[in-house]
Amino acid sequence: MQENEAIVRAENLKKTFTLSKKQQKIEKTGERRRVAVDGLSFSAYRGEIYGLLGPNGAGKTTTLRMLSTLIRPDAGDAFLCGHSITKEPQRVRDVIGFMTSDLKLEGFFTPDYLFDFFGAMHGVDKATLARRKKELFSRFGIDKFSEVRVKNLSTGMLQKVSLVISIVHDPEVVIFDEPTNGLDVITAKVVTDFLEELRRMGKSILLSTHIFSLVEKLCDRVGILLNGKLAAEGTLEEVGKGDLEKTFFALYESEGGRL
Amino acid sequence: MKFFALMKKEFHRFFHDPRLIITMLLPGIIIFLLYGILGEALNSEKEARQYHVYLSGNSAVTAVISEAAQKNGDSVEWMSIDDREAAKDAVHDGKATAVLVFSENFDATEGGNVDIFYNASDETSAAFYSLATSVLNVYRVRFTVTSESLLNDEVVGMQILCSILPLLIVAFVFSACMSLTLESVAGEKERGTLSTILVTSAKRSHIALGKIVPLACISMLGALSSFLGTALSMPKLMGLSLNMLGAYGFWNYFFILLLIVSFVPLIVSLIAVVSTYSKSVKEASAYTGMLMIFSIILTLVATFVPALGDWTVAIPVLNAVVAMQGLLAGALPVWQSLVSVGVNLAFTAILVFCMTMMLSDERIMFGK
Image (cartoon, rainbow over all chains, first blue to last red; front, top):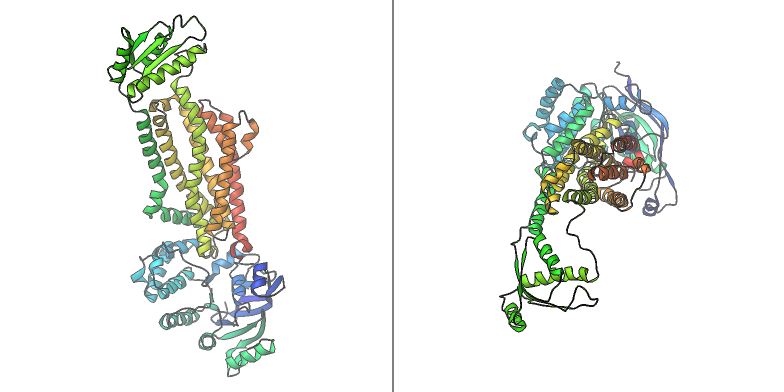
């Protein structure tokens, strides 16, 4: 595979949700359908970190959920390592590691047991699993807590365990939804350092965030998502023009957003 | 491999949690102990009573009273009266049990009279009064009292077992399957741990089977524990010998077990489907409660509506109950049992398919 090969290729993705009466009441709207993602196309390449930047409700999480095959697009398709999310969802799940706060680990089990379990669920052989467990547990300091039940772990340690388990099968594409949300500065640094390490290893990383500093620190390229559409895309220099935050708010206002 | 990993996880979850093991096995042990103690209390051997009764006048009913007393392990000594008042005083003082005074030609005339004097505060005297009046009531209206029972104890026991046991089995199976399945499926969905499994490359059908198969095996333990607890204590509760269970042949037990084995996965998959559909354990519990009531109604229909007909084999739950009733009545409804097992397994397969579809449905799995 080439360095500039598109590992993630989204083509005209569209997703619409039906609003329940309760949601309509909460959001004080009469509309029955809400377009979450509207014709989204972008590509992420091997060995790069691609950031989806946008406010709450822009469609970031919906996009990542479609890419991880948890939900199906109404229209369009996306290809991860050449596998279609609509036609080959199972193959897609083999090549991705997905981490989001919505996916939880069962508190009864220990990190050691869950690592083995999810390894088996991804079809990793025992020898590879043992080697990866040793490497990753030591890298994140989980080894001392490997036999502690997940429900008894601190938030930071739990996040590290979730991260390690999401990449148990050494996936080509790592998808992170708000990777540093709710983390203390130390754990956040451990996570961001590891994302950089994954990039050096040639993995493609796709992350969603609304934190400018995280994008500026980590991302090679960024796509600004507003109202389900890509408002801008390119390298940090191309999109940010020296000041990402200023550019973002200018785009936000031009799309009808109010500060 | 993925399917086995899923199964292993469910077994690990159960066998490494002593609370779950106790919750599953305890009902059977409690039922056995409770029914046993209750049976012991109800049917404990009482001391043989000896009634000393003063008798005035003649009637053939005295022989019937003596015979009835003998049936209870008691005996009656009839004594002639010299002085009625002295006899009454003896009863009052506890020296005699009762005084019976028959009118002249009591047996020959309609409207004959009998006077009974007894001491209500004396247990033996009160027991004799009860015995004598019950015999006299029947005797007076010219009923023929036969001391020989037309049914033997085993047949009576079988009749009671076949009306009660299927109902209890349905209730036990439901309660054994409920707690575990609700927690494992609806609980995991509510906590978001099921979604973590959905993001792996395991097939949805493997995830569904990986839940249902181990949960059915574990629930089977609970159901069998409750079944054994009930079956072993029921004869004792009814004052019968445990030997009455020997009245059933090997094939009766085999088919009962086979019906339970086919019935448990059906209930587990039914609760699993409801749990997958529900947003929370609370919602799933409410639906499952309704299903349990419906199943018990079906069981009651089978118990109280005679000769339902062969169409019942097509209805899950009802088919197993009807077949079990036949087996517990001492019959051997082979084809009915086998078809019921087949129907239950077919419905289980349909429910596993439904759960697989639901796991792939984002509105069910991720709908707000």
